[in-house]
Structure formats: structure tokens, C-alpha cells
Length: 190
Image 1 (cartoon, one colour):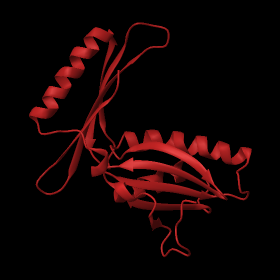
Image 2 (cartoon, helix red, strand yellow):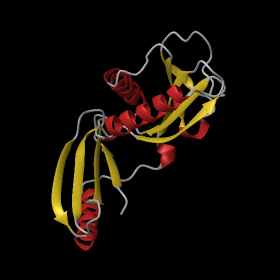
Image 3 (spheres, one colour):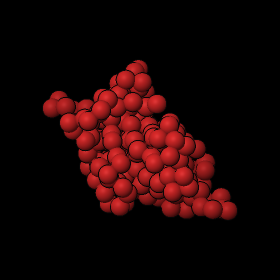
């Protein structure tokens, strides 16, 4: 069963999110149904129903979706979001085992940190000559940049080789550097 993620913006521009999903316990038919909600950019609140069957979870997910619609929460289309690109400068053109570890560790840290704040999803990563790019799709790219810096500092990942850029959804190939500023050179993905 997939995740249902919805958003609503109030009159003063604050973006709120609600999401729900069902996951089974390893090797068992029962699982937990999770509802996560809050203000985008802030630690969310979570409610969990344990020992739930898949059939019960389908009903709970349908009820959750209906309640979200009634309260004005809707899924965001990808084109209504923006890209945040986390880039690490690498010592070699193709990356080393240490860089592979950095990629795995950074992605794991970012997935959890951003998800619990409604700030987006890690969509992909790739290597360009002397660069590691991690692409994040976010409803609030500026807030995501601040959260990414906090997350990577807390994870004790190398900040000396880090750059972060944002780009509109339709033009990810033209990123604009957001960290560090002022930019010393143009931010490129390749």
C-alpha cells in the first residue's frame, strides 16, 4: 500500500501537511497504520494504530483521504513543487567507496529528516565528473535548504565539500545556488 500525502495552505501562506501509510511487520500479516501531520518545516506529530490487517488499513486510508478532502488538504502535483539539489564535490571523477558510503548515509539521513517535516522526498542521486548529486522534490524548497543543512550537520557529514541549489520543477537543469553564498562558481549538475 502506498503513502497518501496531502497539503493545504492557509490565508497567511503557511503550508500544512497530512500523510498516512500502512506497513506490515516483517514476516507477518499484521502491520501498523500511521498518520503523520503538521506544519511544513517543523517536526510533525504522529499517531499509530498497531496490529492492523491490510483490509482494515485500506478502509482507514480511504477514510483518511476523505477527511483530508473535507478539510481542504489535497495532493500536490509534482509541477507545483521545486527541486533541491544537494551536491558534494568529490576528489575523483567517478567517486570512491568512501563517496558511495557518503551517498548512502546522506540519502538515509535526508529521507527521514525531510519526511517528518513534510519537506519533500529524495527522488534520485547520480554521479557526474567529480560530483555527487542528490535530487529532492520539495513543496517548500527554501525551507528544505535550511533543514538539509541542519540534517547533514547533525549526521556529521562533510560540510566543506557541500553545495545546495534550488530549481523550478520544469527546469532542474538550471539550478540556482542557495548554499554557500555568495557562490564562488556557477552551480552545475554535470
